[in-house]
Length: 419
Length: 106
Image 1 (tube, each protein chain N blue to C red):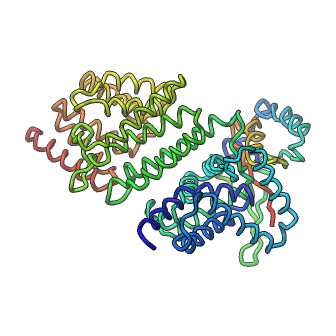
Image 2 (image 1 turned 180 degrees about the vertical axis):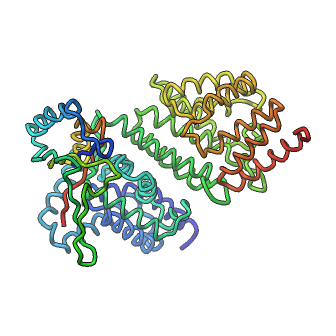
Image 3 (image 1 turned 60 degrees about the horizontal axis):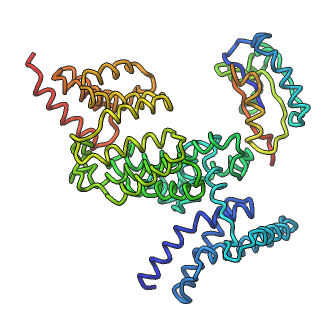
């Protein structure tokens, strides 16, 4: 197989996997069979395409092959034989109803799939894993690596999640209108979690896992196409792109984190920024701001500042205040305090931060003491800063974060008056 | 659907339970509730276990440290979303909790 064909193959597989699986689940109601048939179609393509050439519509080829396989398996099983003509008839009716000769004979069922994978009755880890497996087409081994668990454990997680869908009768559908807003929030939440896991890995030796970020962006973009009138989906995609644009500047050569204001902005990805800003404008034009659009607007403030000193912190603080109205969580309040500290000085930020002390949701969250420490340091209250850096250090979970905090702790101790 | 109390050892008050009657009537009329009962107080429970062939009985509910089961309703719902909607409208969902579980199918 030559390189070109190999690239065309993997492109077609990755792009079409979700559609094939989603269609097959719709057709058979059997998640395992759907995956198995999609895999079969891919294996067939690997065998045929290098010899016969890549078909004009690789997705339709893969879906047809997978569908035929499913029909064969079901026929062979016998039990569902009676239902088959009905399924085939329904598929044919859908094709006929589409009317249009250019219409895809295989309706895009990915929206049903993503809403089902992200159903709130499923365990959160299962939602993330199943979305990556069925929609993004990552293998169980790849997902296991991304989440630092064994392949066996990840396989079990996927099995358990699929079993719950079946046993608890979670419907394979886009939720009806009265549930749609809440459930859409759930889907966006899963994609954002996936991104943040790649953007600030919660454990392990490295801070960034850009593959997970790229998958989250890919899925968020897919969602904006499936739900073009959902401004929060556009807002999420804009947010992810604006954050992802900084990836090359976020760590130094040693892999240590570089704070936003110390980053080399020439290394920010201009194409991602332009894309993100356009998407944000489109989202805001709907006139229905939500938490993701607001966070994207904050990220846009950073993206538009030519250098750190030129950052419009007053606007960022105002956007965080709006975000508190939408999502009054301690983490949002923490970020608001940081923005206020930048706009009005560390003392104002520290006052807001101290209102949050003792909040149970911030217990064990290292960024709370780390932020407090930074503000105390800027107020030249070095001994107090050292205490807070020590707390943060004890709670930080990745090596680069620990190195950053250890460096700051040493500086604070050096600046403290001798006892 | 299992209806559970908020705290172990405390029976709900008549005031807390009163709206359950309207819920029962509504869901039975709608055709999603097939049957159900409120259970006697937790203190009247006997828990049965057999371990290594030996019958072990203990006084009280099986999980005394947990929220106690107050009653159950057998529902026939189209899918989990409908079951969640029905459960969320039971008064115990507000002060206790309601567990939704499919009946065993082999």
